[in-house]
Image (cartoon, rainbow, N blue to C red; front, side):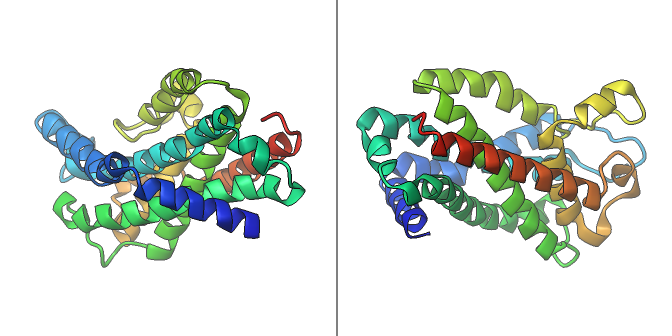
Length: 256
């Protein structure tokens, strides 16, 4: 844990010394949400939920997007650290190997929690009643989502040698995964395509986050096309455990 805390502190110092990233943490989700809400406001319709607006539907998906990008930015530094020689030095001590994984997760989670806290201040503008929000479940959703995204990024970054390769894989897998998660448009229900799309881990993250943000006021029409909270939480738990074991095995194998 001392190795993990030391690496977490290093990541936080690095984050604070990157003004563009700090500004991006605040402005990126706001701009994406505002542009999407305005652009789709005139054409967005959800069958059975007439009062649902585009700004409200997109809001939980933007939270997942924030945590996804935090995971990407946190783990791409693995490639940079390898090129700079820091990673090889960190791997010299056996305790530091697990600390690398834990430190990355903690740093991503720290930034993600702060970012989500700021973004949730805008929830009333999207039509959410924060008094109805299930806050313990929302915190759990953020923790599991941030951890899962960071571990997925860690698995990818550990095997890649250049940042350009990481960006290419991110564009081919992670971003399409988010777009097909139900964050931008409702997933079809009761069809083979809908069943396949619900196997997407990002769909579990979006469903769990959406259930938590709505809380007791989740519209019945939305609930009918979403995974239940126990299902989404169970799938995410399995994902985190598997990705965590794979990450630890990679780092322990010293392929950095």
